[in-house]
Length: 291
Ligand code: KIV
Image (cartoon, rainbow, N blue to C red; front, side):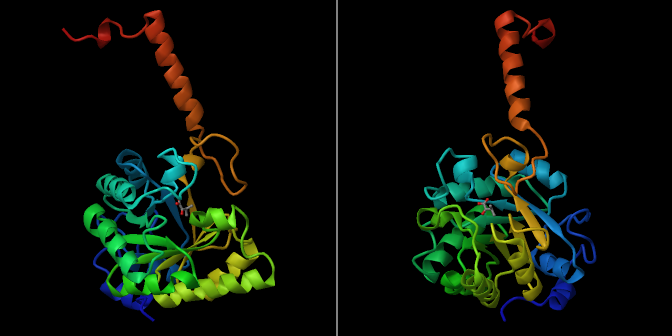
């Protein structure tokens, strides 16, 4: 087992020990050791995506302990149809911005499609760029058993890995966007995938669009935390895409998204108010002028 045990993790922790991930007041960055301790305490934790420094700084100030520079940036930030076209250069640039905008959160960056599927050495080369050039604390990659060797080499090389199983959006062309793990055979495969990424040394695993009962079983069986998105109430952590969660994305949202704000209306209304002020002469006024 390459993963540090939670007990060992606690012994090595430099500050923040015994504090919660959310609501903790530590001044250093959250590490994967803190994540292991949270699972031991049975503490649930939130993760949000972020793609730029300013948004990330808001979430960092709000106490979000883990931020994912997801390749969902493809659809939610860069205007692509899916995550498939996102490049390692783009992920490196976005990740560096998120790291610069934060001081406490653990920043996890996605390895984009095509940057690790060739094998462990390609995965190590790609992940090394994200760690050295962008400064992230961990990377995420998709796949269970099929990504075992990639995860193992990264972890052995000192790069913490968050795995991602269930619906894996980089495989949209072969898999579509469908619930995964339905039926006995698919459920057994998902369990094998979960154990495989844990055995390879992953510090956490995202379960995307998986039946709630199966996600609960995986969460019970694993000693690393599960991070659910559309995976029911029992996972150790929950992740949402920030533009969905804050109502910026627009269009029909999947059932698993809870919308906490309506930024699309707020921003649209503000843009219209500004335009009307300019056209009608209400902005700028004398008070906005310099002399
Ligand atoms: O890219 C992403 O945002 C993700 C989350 C949906 C887990 O992988």
